[in-house]
Length: 122
Image (cartoon, rainbow, N blue to C red; front, side, top):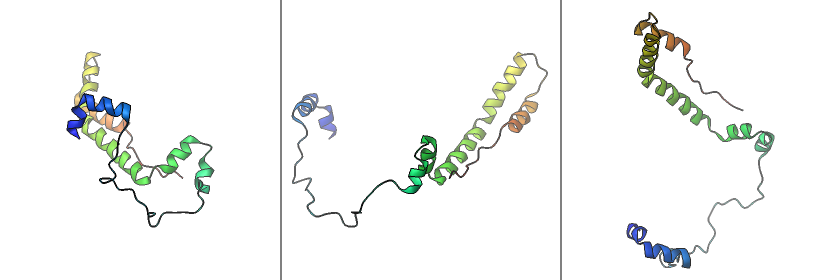
């Protein structure tokens, strides 16, 4: 496949002629897949109840485990970059001729920050 991707002439030919599938290497399935749902289908009542609001619908399909992971990673990112952020804040205050120490900036920043929490949305 890598060789085909590098063959510009072959790719141009495929654009015009289309992609030919070899049935011997990709057999056609003649019997139905077992266990497939074959009844009527439509949106569930739970989805329809949220269908007027795109935001509610978005939250409906986001699994709670994902929200927990997002909150956890957001907090981890904050902690990983805390020193860099405090250094920038300290340098800015020094440039403004404020009488401040770096040790005073750190608690102020951590006190100001609110930990990200995953909330149940229903």
